[in-house]
Image (cartoon, rainbow, N blue to C red; front, top):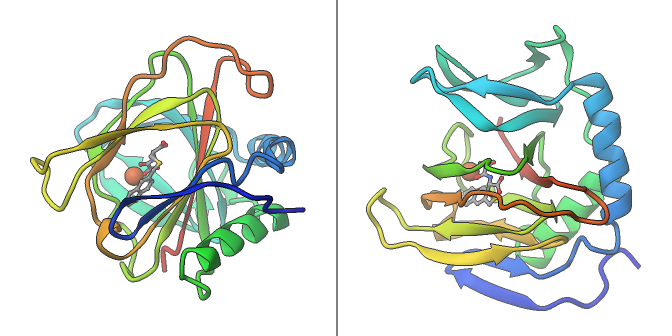
Length: 209
Ligand code: MD3
Ligand code: FE
């Protein structure tokens, strides 16, 4: 069964957490991630501010999210390899479409999947995801491996934030009012996970174009 029973929690209007929804397929997701990384390796990117991000990234899909001194954008060619990004694996698409439909977005067809890898000490500060064309399209997030504290804010950088633990197998659909909410994650603590070792992976499925 692709989606066994799981608990659903509305974190905020438009943000639906499906606890453990990806747990049953986690091993397969991780082996597909390995395959993507063989074509488009994980890399450290710099922000337009010139700071290196502590999270390593790569992408699969028609386009991938890139950051450098000149800004953030989606690109059809991986700047590291000068090749197309690998295609979104069928299992990824099946999971993203299935959970998006469950959350009320049956028309969601992602063209980008950003893969983030967190090692001990990696974090991601509060930001909005606004490099996509259509904010009516949700973003689907899948967490694998070590847990992390997710900070979820509101429409402005100074809106109050709530903290939620994102654990192995958790899936969150961010649509509606939550689509442009400020969000980030705390520092990954040292740990060992049976499937990912010292790491946490996060997949975010997006409709960029
Ligand atoms: C809320 N990733 O890749 S996942 C990101 O754990 C990102 O790697 C974090 O923020 C991570 O941009 C957080 C949860 C998440 C992802 C995208 C969102 C929450 C979101 C987009 C809009 C609103
Ligand atoms: Fe984000």
